[in-house]
Amino acid sequence: MTYKALIHYDSPCAHAHPRRACSEIMNLIGIPCLLWDTTNPNNTKPFYDIMDENPDLQLLWLQSYNLTQGMVRAIAERPYLKIAIRAADSSPLIDSMDKNKYKIIWASDQQFKLISQIRDIIGNDNLLLFNHYPDKYFPLTHENWIKEGYNVKQNLLGVDLSLYSNPVPREVYHCDATFIGGCIEYKRRRLLP
Image 1 (cartoon, rainbow, N blue to C red):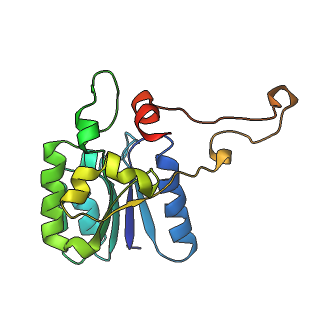
Image 2 (image 1 turned 180 degrees about the horizontal axis):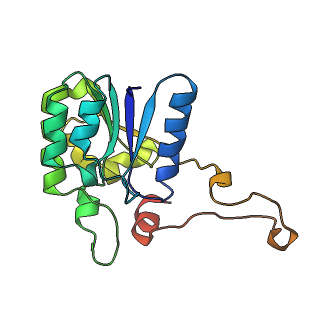
């Protein structure tokens, strides 16, 4: 079987669960989707080889922070692809942050260069940049991408908790209100009222 979609799964973090879920949904509705799991040490197959083995690929879901020139060359052989890329933060706000203090994923010049090359190959209409913020925050977090004319949209996180553990209610964890998640200080200070 050859796949029609490829989703890059690069870490077992909260961001990865929507990727896994989308892959499962695509397969369930009849769109063969490969979850390219590069966290598995036994999965050493390069991107170029996966692309060659799956000539019917039409959709890619990638991350800006692990794009390579080799991936761009493989994409260049398939200018018909539609590609969604989780784009790292890039804006004057992000540029002003102390990146040693705040461990955020920010877009490097190399990421801009590679994504620009991809846009030149497939066109702006076939390229979507996204991140896990509500749309109203993108002018603060992704302003540099927007100024360059990229289509930037939200893909809010949602997680199936059964993937984390056995979801059995336990009295010891009973509470009236719960906050799940965290807050990076610079985002709380800058984004929330």
